[in-house]
Length: 298
Image 1 (cartoon, rainbow, N blue to C red):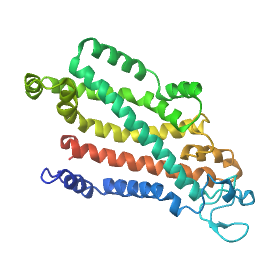
Image 2: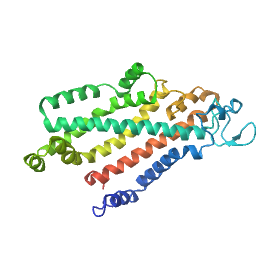
Image 3: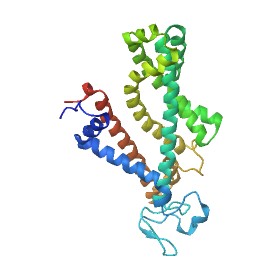
Image 4: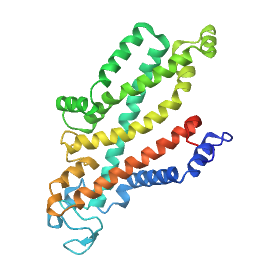
């Protein structure tokens, strides 16, 4: 495999790294397609699955490629039990799943990163308290914590994002703390202290930039993990309400029809979820090589 070039701008190195790997390039293209499909859903979808006035129960459970009752349109991926066009439902479901996953990851990153910087920079009691709480949180399965929180909070987009934040923050705290401990011993931190810079400026202006590379990779992977966990929770009926169908909820809606031959109601949302997760993981895997070329397989 050709080594990743070190010259040029970060964007040029980023793009050239993906062009060198067909698998990584395929993942990047697939992710861009998914993002564009989600962003353009209101304009390219046949119908709004949230608008009951656009649904016709007589079109329920139509097979892929079937025409509507009035013959005015065709359903390329079929319809569900409410007569919703599956392609439209998947496009809107992608929007919800991506919004939940990205929002939860960014907020958890901000919280965990800040706590990790404090723990790594100050050490002592602050480090002990923050890391013991993180260890306690990581000792339980993520889905168990999310289930308990949602049982208390109930359903809703904001509530499931809160549950995902509670699950994720500890990963960023531990990662940041490990890098911060190493960086804290370097001369540029001592120089900043001698210059009388404020603690906030040292933490976020000097220490944080050197902690970001591994955090970017972890955050990218955690977006996929958050989307998968949200889908699992929604499939179990404790995540998002039926008025905000994510991919997980769409899969759950068709699960009861699998044995009756109506496979498409669950299959196509499941395929969309799988392709989204694969694309994110392929991009994250190559991103790791870009940020730290020493980890690249030669």
